[in-house]
Length: 286
Image 1: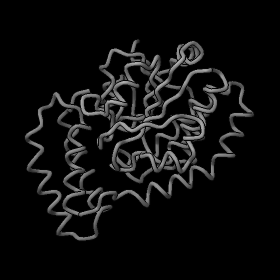
Image 2 (image 1 turned 90 degrees about the vertical axis):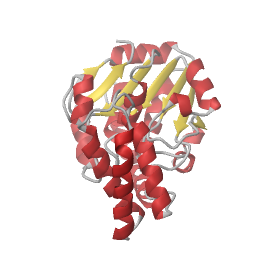
Image 3 (image 1 turned 45 degrees about the vertical axis):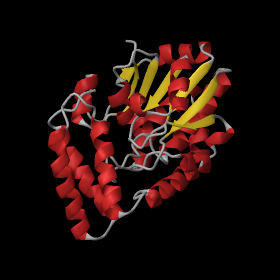
């Protein structure tokens, strides 16, 4: 997905919010913004938003000397989501379609996004809303068939906290399928995106192999990713990609990819052909 002019105000807003997470020093926050304003004109519109974001967040880390501004937030939401785990499992146990409910919960978890949504979200209400409504883009039947009939699944994570919901979906997938599941994390901290530390904290390593994409973008940029990720991506029969960033960088790839996300941005909504707030299960091949 390309970058639109309307993306730039959002990028600047995110830079300010992230700089405040990184440091209380207003002079450094101003320095961050000044530096971001200088680099933005250098990016053509045919690059994806995450390709710009990674450079913005490198500036924030460098100026603030804070390598992981969202560390406390990630720890907080990993713990909060784990506290919900028994309740979420019960919702699946009492549902008419376990796999569909797990998919919906995974999409609900995508609301834990400090890059697009900031901290303006209600996780519990989102869970209720997603479970009680239909998916705006619903390719579940095809998804279920692919889960049942493929032997290798690459599951690309998005955010800390959200990964507890991903864990639940992976657990359900493994009940339906004998497929080998590999879970992908970011190579370095950026925003509240999932890292090795987060995935191991919620014990995804107990149900899937964890690999790093080897890069610090809030998405999956294959050209910059690790050899391990490229090999796993190429050999996977099925890819599950969570969140907006992964959609922005992988939606033009000719591969059997399913995007699970909650639409939080009008630009993304326009690209998908949906509305802000919609819940999406979309195949890349349709």
